[in-house]
Length: 454
Image (tube, rainbow, N blue to C red):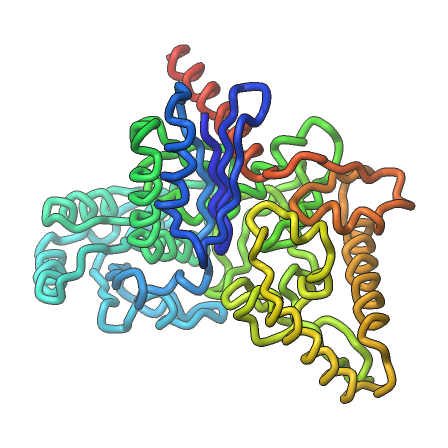
């Protein structure tokens, strides 16, 4: 079977025979197209019989914008037209104001219908959507999680008009705002998710049919076409890493190329503190570390070297890779052989980029508290500082005594854990893709078992 973990800038592909990895590849997506790189990987192993493919798909927050993925209309209970403005969220972040509509319907918290929904109101909204060529609509009706009669009525109505309808997932959460915001984000990323799914289906075409491709959700479940599950997929690969070690009484420290995260396999989070406000999202507890792979280097208020608050990301990426404009934590290891041998980064280092980083470092030194600092000693000090920060944060916030360190950059930070007897390392690369297969296989088996009992 295939395991695929798609991140914002990298994608991991592995072929698994049930006991071990047969083949693996990491694609740098700014240089390699997702569909083409996956097709090449699949084609190279088309002689193998493959039963399923499991995928985790993390979409960049920068792309989670309705202006990029298509406008979405919002139909709410009258009086709640401005719900997006609640709790620090900008209404324009998820849709334009001209696509806010309300209907005179009302259901009490007890579930009793106070004011019935009239189809005439829906007709008027549908006519406007048709003129504006809007193909997606979110329904946000008060207390619909208790009595969904109006929600179902509107859903059937709009679907009959050929409009894709998004309704909040039914959960025990009684906070309408966080539920509605998740629904709005599911709709916002829908087109982008579908485009990426289409690329994946094309990439697998030689070996796996679409009905055998499963996406992993944040709770360790699998899904295929359910549009309310897509926000959860953003956390799927990290949750999968935690689920893989759930019975081992360890926390998981994942040192990936995109993120450094600490995962607590037996603790849950119910809310995602997103750029758009609080979003209902149940996943394992995942902590983003203060130091990240592309954290910018900077001088603090005392003119000492430190790490900036902002992570630059891989677009454009570290200076050493040729396109970056700011020195980052990754650049500190630009001449380290281990980094150069990391799958997906081979031959990506650019000599001119490495020199650009060194020149940038010299400029910072001139502005620092000591103009006579040696560049080499600054690099070593910052390498040591990054290790100390990662190790200390993992010690302070892990919920189990032991920690399992995974990820392509784990080996580079191994020296920092020499004095931690409770730290152990996953020596095999492609931890995310392996975890996606392990969790996906278990989820499909559980689903099949449940259906058999029914």
